[in-house]
Length: 166
Image (cartoon, rainbow, N blue to C red; front, side, top):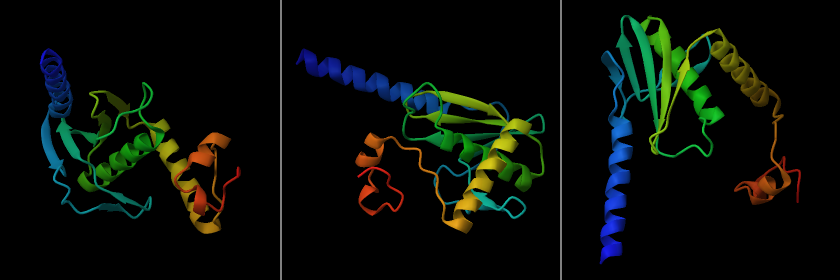
């Protein structure tokens, strides 16, 4: 019985910790929320991207984008793909609202939050990723950086045309 109560207490504390991290709000006014998942995708024809962020906040005329992830990062940093997704949302928010974007944050369910600025470096990185994606789309040439073990255990190994390790 004591073990059950201890486990129950731990579960309640973890749940509180996760919800506390999710409910923390940036300063300012909430301009947009897609937390119910019903919003339509935003489009930027100039950069050729579309998507919809979870939240967009405005503070002193500058936008702040929030992306909430149900998983947790394996290391003490956000996943590279999540960072680029946030960068795309920052660009889309700038186009949609016509206001400067200060930055954004990625919140993971384990309570970790990572903040990023929408600066020239972030723009260059996003443009480079978009260029690489277009190259793959046009040529069919993909970039595989998996180790032998990752390749063998990959979910797509049975159908992968690029697998390097049998």
